[in-house]
Length: 196
Image 1 (tube, rainbow, N blue to C red):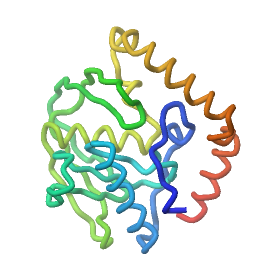
Image 2: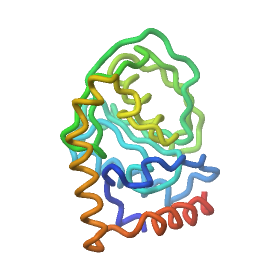
Image 3: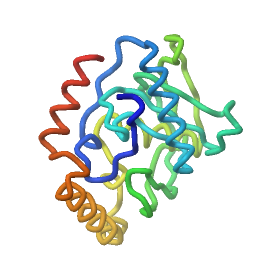
Image 4: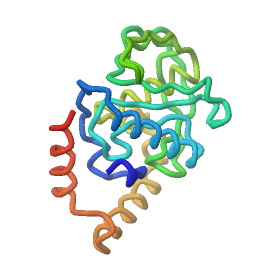
């Protein structure tokens, strides 16, 4: 299963599926985290949440540099929660599940995140500006919240064409049999959850 991971595009049901906390950090979780980092770098992304690769677990990876050669900036967070938010700032956001869509989103300027690392140790991370935005964006994903939900009215109207195109592509891929029916995807997500 972990070899076949790929980034799913809107409106794939995994994107609205609330991720379950992981109770075990085993070899499989480490392999999945590594694969997610690879996919993120391949797509020139800054962050990726597990439900973006159709895994219903609370696992996110990010690197504000988007540079695989700067691994010291990499973060792998399991069961992350934001315990503090400060300030407010608007900035442009995109998402690997929404190719070509970028809009201004208002987020907290700084956050404190509590999570577990791959060794199972609890960590507390203070993040500012871009890194804070990434944490908020990816942790939202784990709760089935997408950045399109945070858009203002004008941004939402401006995004309609791209969203309609993404929906069309998705349903065409389902008709061709490239993507299973949504009910089947939901069943698979629930089956995976049982392993958390």
